[in-house]
Image 1 (cartoon, rainbow, N blue to C red):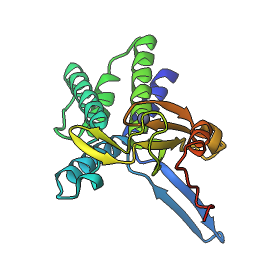
Image 2: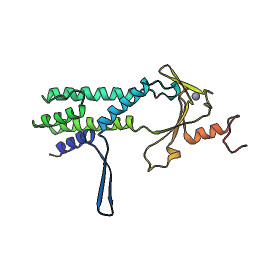
Image 3: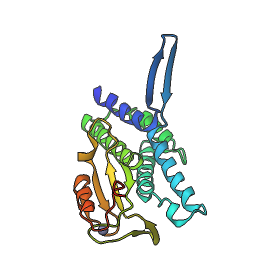
Length: 214
Ligand SMILES: [Zn+2]
């Protein structure tokens, strides 16, 4: 039954390490590098932002806590726990990946309607996409310039002040040409530009120096 294969693939993509590189060096070596499973990477993302938050770093060096990742992780974990209870599978506390695999084994013991299986596959694929959005955000680069629209030189988040409100975001996908795909954003007034458009506006600003003028 192909739906079940798809379901197992969807479970694997969340809970199994992915292969990053598979290089054969002068035919004597095979080098395989494994990536951490996606659910673990999501959990690591939360731990990392929590530990940065708790450290005694200066406010402008602090990474704002990734509350999106935290909410996503809690939503996914509680759904997996519900599924496991429903299928009478073991719930491994603090290990949603292992619980999800246990759920798969228990749930597929009973014959399921193909559309029910497909619905689960879609949900798991949605989780995978959401996790990737959280842990592989676009490349960001802060700009030192004040915002051409609101003039801000700082921005606030969760009661903390940060410098450099302008940020350019480029997609991670290296296949695409970057400048036209890049967008810019002012974290003070929330204005958005295409990266080229912002570059043009910054050039028009009276105090603009691009490094080429002495
Ligand atoms: Zn602004």
